[in-house]
Length: 304
Image 1 (spheres, helix red, strand yellow):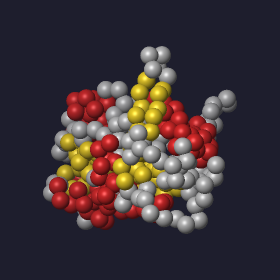
Image 2 (image 1 turned 30 degrees about the vertical axis):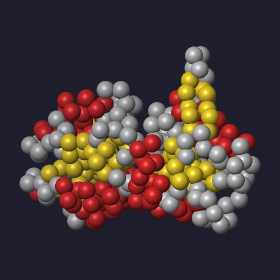
Image 3 (image 1 turned 90 degrees about the horizontal axis):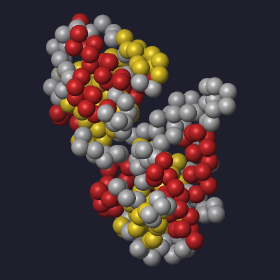
């Protein structure tokens, strides 16, 4: 029996190389390029008829990646793939999960419907959910979530002496508490108010008893970096050491990376859900576990 095919979309090749062994899959090849008018050309270079196909595509900066991904999924079915799954280590469009103003698009719902129509299952890492308890509230196909908390705990425990973990807001407390337990470190949680995409106000708790420790700010996503920047400024104002900042997903929109360095962050660390020079925490293990669960779930049937 042939192994499942794992086919990386452009930019995902490095993670695919480590996942193929861990997930017991075979690497496949796809050619994606642009015509002169910016339309997408796609050609599978691996025969996929009768095979289970998994497309690997992290969806940071998603708009340029989304159409090629949909074309690839549809073409895989046309060429005879028996099942088509998606591994999106970072899953975009989870933010807008309600209509805050009249006339707004609830893009998380639209996005989930489109992906559910094209894929038989979806695997991701720590999705940025707010008002949905799980991805099952959005997607109509099976979803599998890998968690980075254990890998972050291990990194903190081995790399930082006397850390103090800091969560960005009350919503993060359960997650940060889990990381803190694994790292055998204390934690505190900020109070945060977001006024706009680029304006954030944070309030520090009393940190007097923790002044001898290294502050470690942990967030699920760093996009504009404003939460990290504001927290860094406040920590320095009260005489704490510059923080080490850890994010599961490092988007670094615009000048965010340079802005964080300029703000005095001691170090920026991310997992490898999105390729970036800050990648220092490998999530191959938990991601491969969820891929194997998706591939071997017997009740999944082709839905197209």
